[in-house]
Amino acid sequence: MTPSTADQPQMSVEDFEQVARAAPETVTLELIRGKPAVKPVPDGDHGEIRVWLQTVCMRLRPDLGLYGERGLKVEAYRRGRARPDGVLAPRGHFAGHGLWSDPDGVLMVVEVTSSDSDTDRRDRHEKRIGYAEADIPVHLLVDRDNDTLTVHSEPANGDYRQRPSYPYGTVVTLPEPVSLSLKTEELKDFAR
View 1 (cartoon, one colour):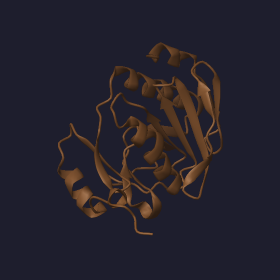
View 2 (view 1 turned 90 degrees about the horizontal axis):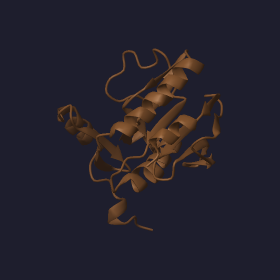
View 3 (view 1 turned 120 degrees about the horizontal axis):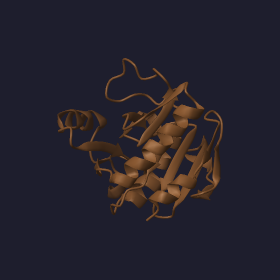
View 4 (view 1 turned 45 degrees about the horizontal axis):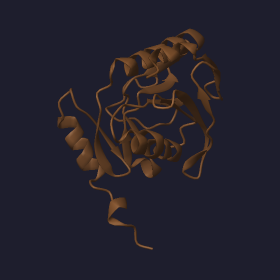
């Protein structure tokens, strides 16, 4: 079966990286499923959720860092480029890396949904698949449209086998290798 035109990459990884290097600092670019995209500028609540998670991670796992907007090579054969809202890895892990890092050693990626029209396709579907294909053990999606946290784990065959969702206010346990319990009551302050 021949893939449809919509499934064809719109540009090569090499061309994308060249464009991304030349983009102004005010523009964040990603290459997801072969299609370049401009990542929306986060609003205040989006930033507060990230700060909340960063604070929790620092307190419970001081050996780890939650890196914001860290460029990762994702998808099968590392053909995608994503900038997750958070990348959890051992502190010092990215020292000496360039703009785009292999996901080896990354324990978790975090996405916080935005208010733009592409958030469903990008944050809930395409990035999830790209992270699973890259064998990132845990993908945490903070879904502001539904006031839930979805914990994706056990990557296999291009997706995550486990995807339980929890409403804001519950205790959410992140599986190994993250091994954290998040008390999410504070997230209710950022519900729409």
